Image (cartoon, rainbow, N blue to C red; front, top):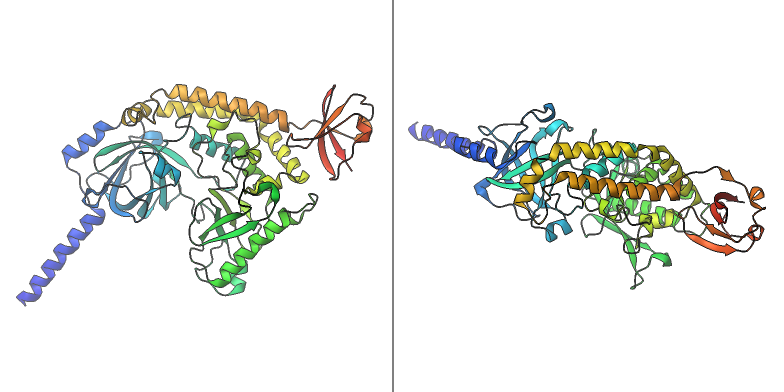
Length: 488
């Protein structure tokens, strides 16, 4: 009897210790006071304690941890747990170049139970972006998300500013954002089972995949044979990482590979009047996604960190949501469409799709729907400045190499870059009334023919001599200005 009682006492003590380790961490009053003092208190504070205070330095395995979120009443959001009773979570580093190239690390955060942090949709999965590689600082991700919302992509991650403390050390100002995951309030698809072998369920199931730069699993690679986008080795591939399902049977792998081989074969053809690829790719979402990349000069769009999903067997493949938006706005003075940037056009499917007159026209229509909304972005940037004015000073003191204590300087730089890009895009995409060939036959000066991307095709001495193999919409430039024409 005593032996059994002794056993249950030991078991109870072990369970209590385990519970404390995974979800009942308690900070002392002195620790709480120290944590509060090292943050600005002007934005929410996320405090994380890893098991045994192990430093968070690697991308591989998660570390066991506990956390609490203190909002200071910011925007009316509620606290999550408390220093007296912290909730359990798991944390690791994330990123590729941002992980290797910067001392200030970004983190992947996995909660033990679903929470709607700072008013975001309830989920276990969040990301803490370090805001170390953007210029102007603190602007890329929130502005990029806002442009996505302005264009009405089906889902855009939410983000909030937070100051992060790990194991009592102030880590700086971060962007807490929803991670790209399958869910009713995130990427809403009809998930299929891992390792499914029933072809009917596979054909009718949903997919979430990512065009990627980096090796991952499960991943397929599709050969690209268009000579315009070959590298010196003569070999280029689309790298497609599958996020849902997470494990593929041979049947799933073959079906998925077949889908993107079909897309590649439909896009990379000489006949740019073909609409076969439009039966596979959702044109509306593609154009929105492409326009977001043009406004923010996201040069890596359609190459890496580019998510594509298919809701079910009755749906087309949709581009989105936007992701990995750091280090974008700085390129806004590059007067070029992203698909024509030589350092990035290597295997971009948009490099080829942009040659289709139908896509060109839809992109112009998309621009016409947003061109008068630039002032909204100015107001949005002002709101970022107002929210972060104190926190950036603390961040810049912690990370002088990455931070900028003058948020208004960052905001003005962002506005200037956006304004330059806006003006350039308007020159390229503003939709003037369509001109017919008959209306232009009176032109007597030399004319130049351009496609709708602004790329020059040829010069002619007289307009009525114009000949070009592909039908569609074009621009002609004469001494009297630029006009839009239709070649039949």
